Length: 128
View 1 (cartoon, helix red, strand yellow):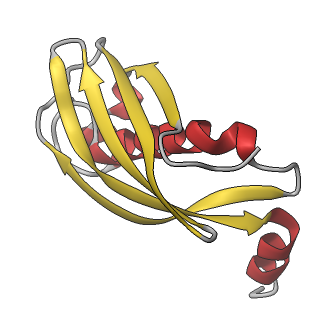
View 2: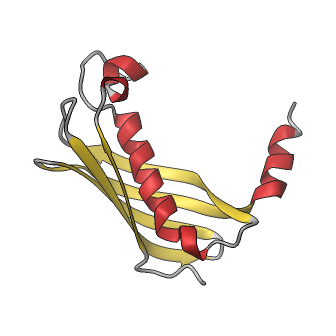
């Protein structure tokens, strides 16, 4: 299978205390943390292309440009959606959007590179 424009993925979770800004160190309030929203968006992007990747390949995040536009309290469900908008060789561009039960909470763009898993790990761990 080939990665193509229009592929979509979703990721969802319920906001727990450990997902809040005060717990992850990105703020002082018990509201859904921006880093957790970003991770959910990346997860949705991974899900969008997962079926198209051969076993020896994976994708890694390379760029994010997001806006967190609304706070979400503990206990609400959050959902992220990603859609492939461009394929340029091994670079994949997505639009990403996040929602809670009341509406949109974040949006932006995300890029991922398709890489050889073993080659990437070998190069990374050669730093040690």
